[in-house]
Image 1: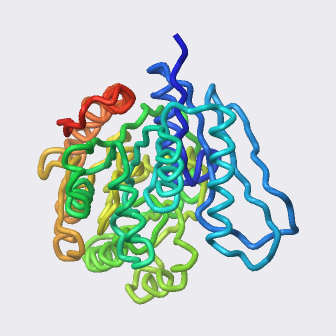
Image 2: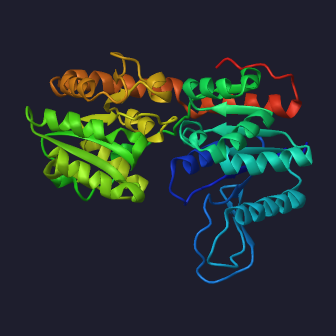
Image 3: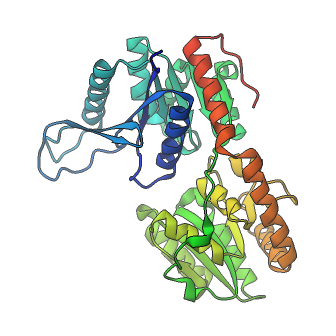
Length: 397
């Protein structure tokens, strides 16, 4: 029997750096294991200024059995026009479908990727799944130019998946019919061997209690509140704030000024963008992992910290608040509350035994509830329902 052909569309895919790309790569392997022939069409969200002119191209490679098609629209002018760029990406995606005759489309991230893919799927009579990842419903819906496009995409989907119940609730408020054609389930993470990682370059700069956080630090990460909490806590105990990653470039000056104003400049270590393996190596030096996000989907960085056995303080938003259980596998604080965040950090700083207990419980949570086998079963069920055109009933996961 011929394997069904699936085309996943994404703004990134490894070796591109980004959480969505990592998730798509993981999910493609899960789908391949279930028996699907998986193709990924990759295109970027912004037309970059041309470095010379060129006609459109599609660069296809095979990565671990997955067919990866990188769509490159033509560059005919240095004055990029968004609708021209997106129209050409749409045409390239349509050409890809004509060549391969996909049985199902699946878009990650609603605005742009989801819209273009859903438009093509509907015109071609092909089932379409859209996956909400976080910022698409937390941020982009507040753009008047994007709101109607996002709601149309959600309404037109055959199924929509969410990485948290908070996101699903918002989606259902915007489009009530999603109550009958959507699922919320968490990301998973593959086991990691932490025993043979290289010593990170800045390890000798970490002094006292090390409060760590990982990511691309921007507005949604709640870094102001972490700076407030650490600044107050540093008056009581020696500590270092370790930021594994870098600032979003457009916000760099703001965050540099915020660190200086907080008095934490001499106590903060920023690694810059580094390979994942080096980022994982820093977790061995972290005493307390903090993820005080204002909203954040289901961040891979949280799952990695749990896998490494860290004591975690997280905000009660999205999947963070669903995964962490207060007093069982971590401490949970309201978003945007520096006082509560400081109190939680101090609680963990004061007890090595409590940090160990929460770290072990976090590991157990990952192995039992966030394993690839659990996520594979969830995706297999969604794909089967959509491909078999079973009447949409909300899936209880």
